[in-house]
Length: 387
Image 1: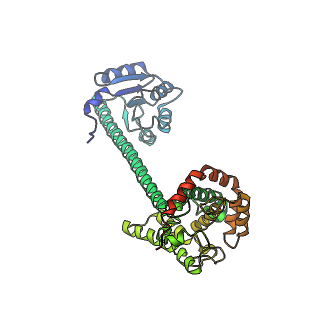
Image 2: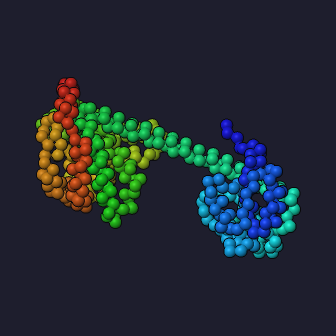
Image 3: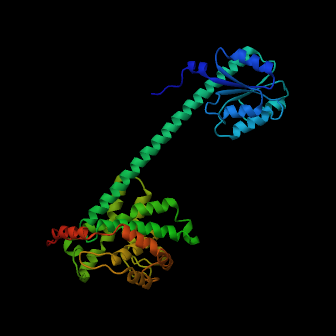
């Protein structure tokens, strides 16, 4: 456990005495030098220079009535500068009016002594204020350490959270025809689109930096429910029969329920899990109400799911799969625009079109290699067994 500084620290403290009268400087230096290191200044400008040096004083004894810059002005400068604001200032002055003392204390001085100064009182006040400063510095150091430790622990928790999300998403990906890069691409599409959509007044309040960060974290879990779909359906290269499609559609509910179960085990609400549930459950809904699982329409579909829907479809169109060739970007964008107001939120489509260069950059950055696709194809062969 760290302890406050020992009182012997005070013997090494530096006292700056500021007074325009040489005799006063000599007198104060004589009183203080046995216990402290003493610096002197005969004007305010020089005092400020010393206070702002690489070795600032621990306490300042400051006269008020000085030419050019009086003690009040010196104190104002000291307290306005973050580098010197914490240096204790004790006014030493012949001004004895209550208003003068009040002004000095209001400016931030810690004490106010009138001349002629009683040496014993002066030494006691100096000692007490140095001890108070030492305690304050100690607490500031402790607070800085604790804040740094909180930041470090927060980073660790965030990293564990991110790794957990990606591990769960990768688990679903191992049984699907998509590659792990699909997860990354859609994640970045969603973030870029959300940042662009923030230009719209109706969305600006919702799409805060924090919410967009939660979207980014949650997007990889959109297809987590596919873990519960039988292999004969999930890996079928052709069109689904009606009954097969009904089973396939259940991946939305399975995903939502899995996340809800994890949240229940955690015993508390977490922002990114709420958004993850929305995305997993509703990313197959369509703007005109023809989607699933609930047939939601328009703004009844959560914004997170509307963003995910367009990102998911776009990536499915432009990327090669083990069962299909990639579609050109221009054709994929034409299909997206055809779905404006039917499949997709029309406002979101308009902004999606405006970030085409960003979409292409993301697709290139996380492109699937031929080797990855071949490895995926070989991996999926082991799952092609009857239920």
